[in-house]
Length: 101
Image (tube, rainbow, N blue to C red; front, side, top):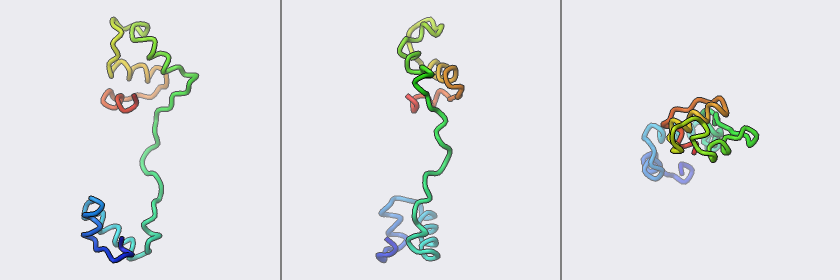
């Protein structure tokens, strides 16, 4: 967009980003051209959870909660988190378990 003559404000509005991002991108573009704006790849930590079929996480959940020692077959986020931890060793807060599911 900068190559086509767009202003920082136009870029910010078109892409719904902060003014700080627009300013940072413009500075990078001025200093290094379009190549300076190329993606550097995915950032942040990689996913921690990977359940291999041999680990049997899905099988454990399909059997129900009672075989895991619970009084009912109701799966709650806390119960699923406990199964994930027992199968994989990865501890998830119950608030993130729904994303895994």
